[in-house]
Image 1 (cartoon, rainbow, N blue to C red):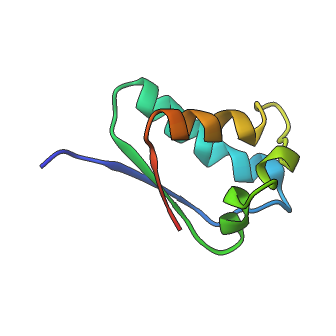
Image 2: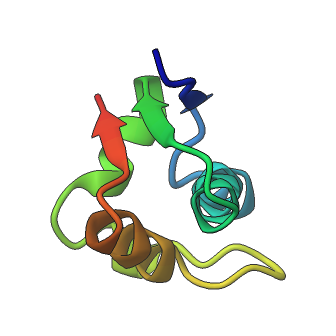
Length: 80
């Protein structure tokens, strides 16, 4: 059985920096060759609604749309 890193979050649009960081961690893990999946609960479920990601820009991190595109293109599973 292959190990999978599970990253879960509940942060949503009220704190864009905290909302974005788990997605950046998932991207880094995937780039390092680690199988990864994300679990969104509570407020974080809003992040994948149509049009929401484009409004989320944390401080010191690329916009959420960038890492969501990476997740889609690299088949990172996102469970809601």
